[in-house]
Image (cartoon, rainbow, N blue to C red; front, side, top):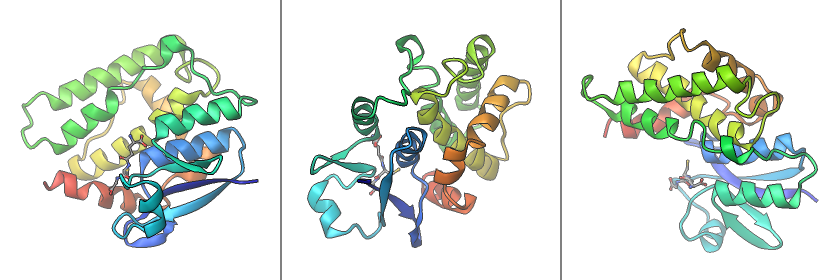
Length: 213
Ligand SMILES: N[C@@H](CCC(=O)N[C@@H](CS)C(=O)NCC(=O)O)C(=O)O
């Protein structure tokens, strides 16, 4: 039986998959583990009663396990690892936090209105650390095989590339060649193609309120 998951619909297009990186992480995990699933698209600007009933916090993703809707991508991915261990995506603990500060640095730089406040340098430092790591251990974070840490990072890197390109005309420096190889590898995986927001415009529209705040 297909596992039910509820994820963000595109803003202004409630029948189309949206741009939530946490939702995509869960979908990537389902695809890579070859777990059949049924998508419920949630319009976050008009949340259905049933969704608020099972998850009063109103956040996606949520997934249905043994009759109970469970929120939070960390928790959902953990349960998927336990319930479906056959195709293992477990990241060795020593690599589990690689790249974990990139998303926060990206958001700070995106929101920054002062070019000299150090947010760009902070992001560059995190991306350089990832580059060094990949140089030593790549092509994926834990080596030859994709694992959970890559599936968490991939949607965030996608948002970074699309959104910083659009709002700041900024791109990851070519000198960080291992990061470039890594993103190409991730974004061209079948699982990624299948679960990414169908249009870059959805990603840009999703971040616009934060940039203009
Ligand atoms: N820690 C949560 C974060 C989920 C999250 O922030 N989801 C956003 C969408 S990207 C959300 O549902 N926001 C509620 C809203 O916009 O009303 C996770 O990893 O699942």
